[in-house]
Length: 123
Image 1 (tube, rainbow, N blue to C red):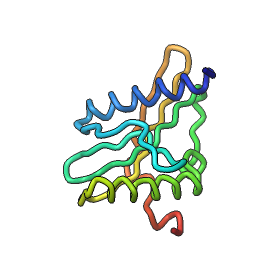
Image 2 (cartoon, helix red, strand yellow):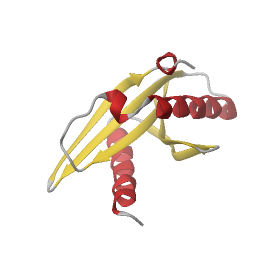
Image 3 (cartoon, one colour):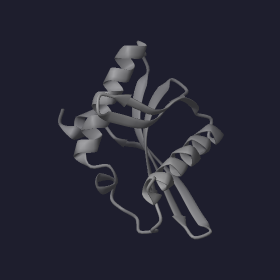
Image 4 (cartoon, helix red, strand yellow):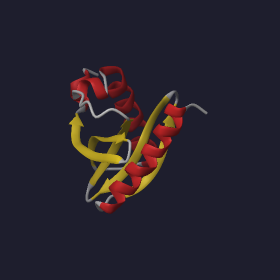
């Protein structure tokens, strides 16, 4: 397996742990619908969170639209819709990003809540 794949998997586990510490209930990890994937599906209060995890080794901050571009947003929204229908869920939906920077022995984890909306992707 590639180094970037391993970094991504490690980041997803760190993100799940981070969200649990903040009071989120993790429902699914790496949930797939067709060729689309959602890294983390979680509940927090009366909200259903669909979370994209981005793990980097560079501390250079990126714009949200660079982190999760329009195509990825559209795919997440389609997968989220399928998840909601398959599980018959009636909750407010939130799309989040957990951004992790691992730089040597330093690590930073940030939650970007409500990073985009279904109407942002012009679906």
